[in-house]
Amino acid sequence: MLTNLIAGALGGILIPQLLNRFRIDPAVSSGAFVTTVTDVVGYGSVLGIATMWFGLG
Image (spheres, rainbow, N blue to C red):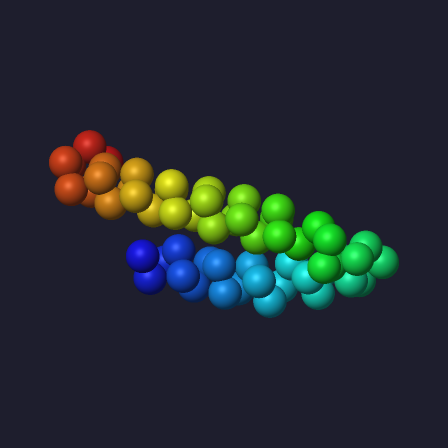
């Protein structure tokens, strides 16, 4: 949960700044990107923990 929280915070800070640099309105499009980042990181961390837990790595 901590990994997902950190990824969401960093995504919420960095993605709007990146979109603003490319002259894209961050208020319109950053929500989808931040949600995607947190979902991918959360899914990956859960699978990583399960892999370590069951000794498959």
